[in-house]
Amino acid sequence: MAKASRASHRSARNPQQIEVIARCVLVRDGRVLLCQNVKHGYFYLPGGHVEFGEAAARAAERELAEEIGVRVQVGELALVSECAFQAKRAHHEINLVFHAEPRQRWPKELTAPRSRESSIAFHWIDLAAAQDLDIRPTAAKAWLTSGMGGARIEWISEVE
Image (cartoon, rainbow, N blue to C red; front, side, top):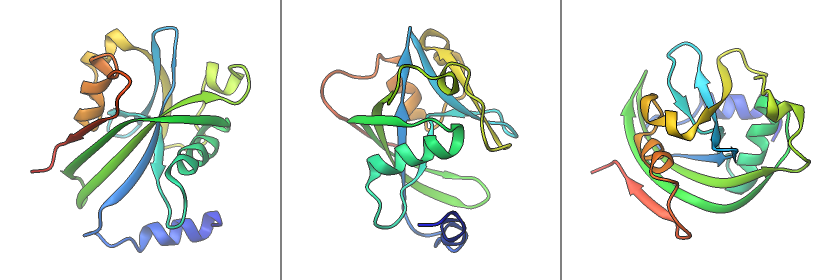
């Protein structure tokens, strides 16, 4: 889907629909790559919306390529979480978090990531320091700070 049609699809998104978000977890030397909302300051795992007809793993790869210009290889599904929150409108999200690795040996774009979008920034954060940050959704923060689960996929719902 072309970038322009993706944008128009997003703006036409039904506010009552459940959003599916594909995210990546990249960990290196005890640090995790997090995306920060520049305006509001909170952090989240990099990724974005899964478009209609797009595989979730491919969406995660696409989003990192668009946001910081690096190609990653998405691996196993690591976490599934559900959350609902109020921002400008009500949101209900299903977050699919995949382990990821760069397709080439830690390129500069990942060593010192620079966002291609002015509204977000990327930072390598010590996993030990993640406990003190505003990481959203809270299920992702809990998962990161607990050691990222074991070999099994975690399902965490924040929706009652």
